[in-house]
Length: 155
Figure 1 (cartoon, rainbow, N blue to C red):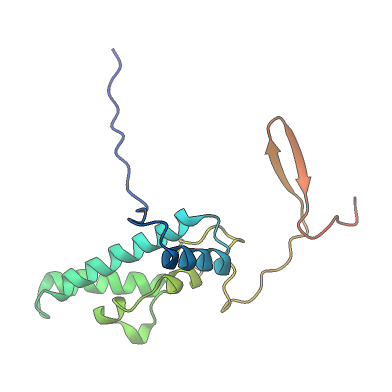
Figure 2 (cartoon, rainbow, N blue to C red; figure 1 turned 180 degrees about the vertical axis):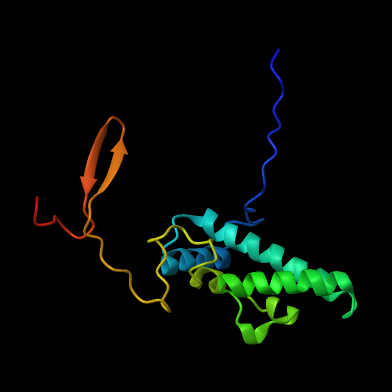
């Protein structure tokens, strides 16, 4: 007899309540174009992560400043954000977490929230080096090569 498997998986993004409002469409398309994201789901994923971090900071700010839980969890949250490069060392307060924006996550290279290793172009980090090696892609049964900056000398 088959055993029922649990399909519990973590939620990674939340779709907007009103996805076709012009303001949100323009903002999402601007982020996709500016940072080289593949689709809107990646924008929603960053927004969801930022919302969870800001929610944790808001809950910690409601506690007393000397509360053990606030000190322990607040320091852990702040050190995590400093380690991935979202927050500066001089801004290690919970109040500064509430000022974070989506762009802060997309611009830092170690946040793990970008589209891919060579997809995100951050204006602060400078342009990516050109690709000259071929990328092999499988399209159905026939793999093909494409070059992003022309054919190399060997071909």
